[in-house]
Image (cartoon, rainbow, N blue to C red; front, top):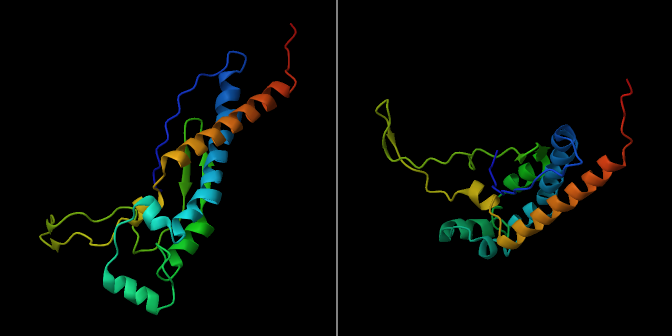
Length: 175
């Protein structure tokens, strides 16, 4: 799981119960936002312009030369295409009352936790920090205009959920 932090503070309308808000409206709204990110913004990270747009770490000359020789062009985050395919085909979006999670599989060369430790570990083994760029950070980078777009998607989904809940007939208990 790769965290993307978007904080939104909003109050529940008085005519909507807490149960409807937390069970019916907000999880679906957050899930809509996550789906929008997966379908429209995640593919942008694998386009040619992405390295400049999102500020990816510079790749070595040897890496670039080998990648071009293998015929993979100049698309960032694509050496063999395995990372792009795994991310594209395994993305799972889950909405909760206060957040959304997007989970997808990553290849071994793009671990969710990067080794940044150099020195001896507890067992006395010498460890060297990874020199590879933080691919997880590169994939999950969001620009300001994308953040605003995601908030607009979230707001539209909340408004649709409110309309849906308000349109459902209410059961009234008569004693």
